[in-house]
Length: 235
Image (tube, rainbow, N blue to C red; front, side):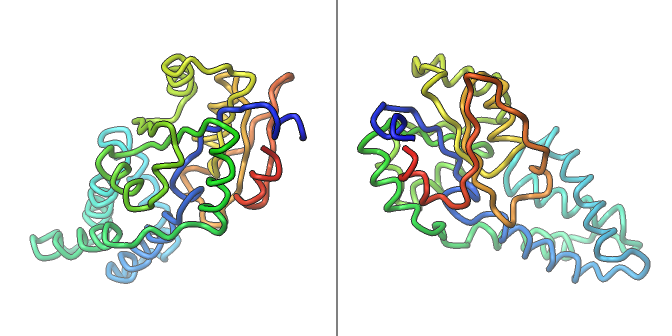
């Protein structure tokens, strides 16, 4: 891998659950919601499956972010509860989502020092999806923005989004990598766009981001690293 360390590469790096914790806060909110619902007939697992379905539907209509998540919680309550969704109940349910916004940015281990090393040798772009104000706010609070040449917040991470970023910055696909924890959004569409990828698994990756890893087609490369800090040993 010495060539990757000595040849300037472009690393497009995911944010949520790659640079900092994110989904653990949603999981806590979901656990609180399920406990609050306290359904008499459906198990916690069944309620969660229904919420997953509703979240998927809402993403198509509302995109990603806390607003979409809060709407999914309320819609799930309406579908499963015999009790009407009163303004007071609606406020309580929205509070589960609102609590996420107040969480501090918790960087994953070795993220800061690793980015400090990498940005001296390579071009770094932060590429994330979701609500622009939410995501840019997290980037600002993280203190990591100086390491990145640019920040791109896209509505969806698909192959065309990656191709658009390649065109915008005049990148060379052979030396461009997408780094992230999500097979569905980070790895597979980047490979489909003709880029290389680095998969860094996270134990709490959102269930809607799970997918089977695609296969890299030569001369593309797909690397799997156990933790973010190993990036500075490869690049």
